[in-house]
Image (cartoon, rainbow, N blue to C red; front, side, top):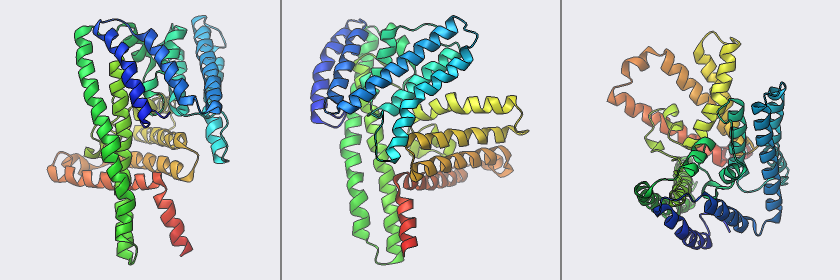
Length: 397
């Protein structure tokens, strides 16, 4: 059973939410029920994929072992805790790295649906233990954080301290009623996004270029533009729809799942876009990659100008993002491309007198929005493999 796709999922969730809602209306903690329900839902998810279930079990063992070993080393002030912490990070990343590398060779070693999102959760906990932000953690709470089923397969990426604070102090009756009402709205909006709007643009993605054809060069260019535009809109509505439905189910369980999108196509520059698109991923990378790379660069005085330090952080951030999606030319090129865009934007905004003089003017904002959207949709064409296909087709001609 696939989450947010199969009709069976919606039927089961509809029934399963009844006890969660009753508990929420009474202002009672539902983390025991939520943990049990999440394990049952994951049983449905993996019931026809025993290999995936075995890989998931290995991941849980590795993740729990790495997290609680790190917690012990730092609370006991082990003199070698930093070295052991680094080893724990490597161990926590091994299942994901194994899955991504083996996928290049059409294999699936330790891979399962949801491994990418779970790895972000696991790594985040280990880093925050090292930073002293997490000093105690129960096994049940950590397990619930990992297996919380509404966000298991497609995010959004939740933060452990926020999640554990919410399940420790559930909303009272009035708060829960408000959260539930919002959640219902999010869920319905997500259904419309995923099953109506995404479906329309997925159909147009095939029909538009076919109807235009490639009889002339201008037709071929127009068909490619329509394909790129429809793919970007399909990707948004499909992904945003899953995220909204996850927010809705989470709300019914008394958990505020963070938003993943905030009108990304209204962005005025590429930095603004990444503050609005896949927000939980971009903020995770900002906090755990960009800030750390920048801190090291400043401490070791790699650059005299802080702008170049930021550029290094952007390149590391977005290249890692591309690799996280998959070890293919298209995904890696997408990551590097956005790293370059962010770096250029950073340097331009810091150093350009023209930008500083006109950035608040309406005409400039419109022009900046248009350039940003062209860059964003070209990125989607890279991500989908459309650019690679066109380049290879041109080479064959």
